[in-house]
Length: 178
Image 1: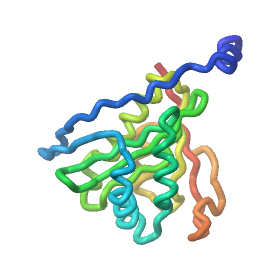
Image 2: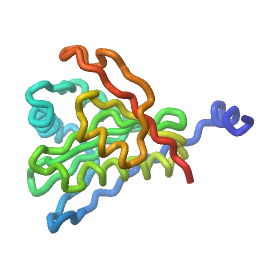
Image 3: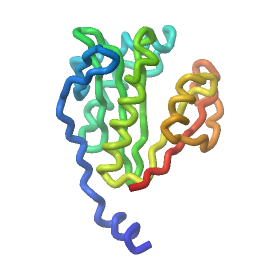
């Protein structure tokens, strides 16, 4: 209890530094780097493709999130000049929250999404997070399967979370241990 009380008054400094690198998966090479404003057009295009024309985030949303350097990290995955995936995480208190993740449909089931989530889990653990959270559409069974494989568990239902489609979301949580 005293440790939690102390952390409240003396919060741990968050380290979201990230060094770009190349990743080899299934005999393909991908570049992983921090997202920047230069990636916004590609991010919007990928969301259009992944979410079948329904863009959950606007240019303003991405621009706003990418400015939150103190507690947010967004990573992009490129193969050549093609954006094939991205993930965003916000650190708050002792929690890492996945804000957004998408992988280009033709690149799904190659381990990119799993790699991105494992990377964010590792960064959250490095920053002493005790849990990870995310929301997923209640009808997105493929994503739910991946999240459960990585240890996320259903927490509760957020009714009409996706307001434009009147779709529910499942809030999921993963306890992080050393």
